[in-house]
Amino acid sequence: MNDATSISFATGPMWAGFIIFVLAMLALDLFVFGGRKIHRVHVKEALAWVVAWVSLALAFAGLLWWYLNDAYGADVARTKTLQFLAGYLIEQSLSVDNMFVFVMIFGFFAVPPELQRRVLLYGVLGAIVMRAGMILAGVWLVQEFEWILYGFGAFLVVTGVKMLVFAEQQPDLDQNPLLRWLRGHLRITPEFHGEAFFVRKNGLLWATPMFLVLVLIEASDLVFAVDSIPAIFAVTTDPFIVFTSNIFAIMGLRALYFLLADMADRFHLLKYGLAIVLVFIGGKMLALPWYHMPIQWSLSIVAAIIFISVVASLALSKRQAVAAKEEA
Image (cartoon, rainbow, N blue to C red; front, side, top):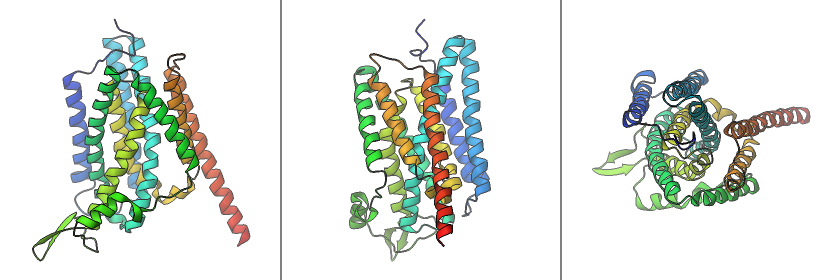
């Protein structure tokens, strides 16, 4: 038997079943729980969805262990389950950076809160399709050219260092080349038309600002996927583990945004923590010829970095609030 890290266990029905599950959850969100009516997502609703997606991810990990323990034994079950949990934590942590970008995009276009939910749902659908393609391409590259893992590692280290250096810089969306191209080649209405991406005016098709928002959200996810997908290859190259951990993280991101968007400025130091995570993961990949870190260590270190970043951010925000109050 192959060792626990090299076994590829997922069958066609398992892939089909997971994809059907994801589509069913999206349909429930779109047509049942949220309804088709426009509404603002409040903290209580967002918290319920965050808890639901985290619970589903943990339940999936439990089912994964149960199946693999019966089919391949305890060692494979333990290793693959830890790989999923580590991948999920890495993807969920790195996807938080998307949240800051969403806040910036919605603020730039002054998108009303009640219109944000649907565009993020379509953003999730696009992200699933894009990431599926990128994951399959990445797995193929790693299997064909094993040395590319070291290229991924170097890329993550460089990206993490750049994030540390430029963490305080805010991009100027007015100068974004994609946005400038869209504005130069499309007829765009000056105002929103509900959740519509296109409207007809005087027989002509016009794009709405909501379409620009959608394109920028999809583009931002593509950029972040370039970082996050190579990062999970430090944990596993099993396509099923990579895909499922990615999807659970993406599905929970939208709810996490609505839960934390109003408090985004309180997590000032989280970007530094995410940058350190990238440097750590990249360094781990570069060190593979000499040292293979146990999965549970990687999981613990990433969790510790994120936890310390969040606690330090909240402590700094509290200190700044107290100082501002004293000055007033």
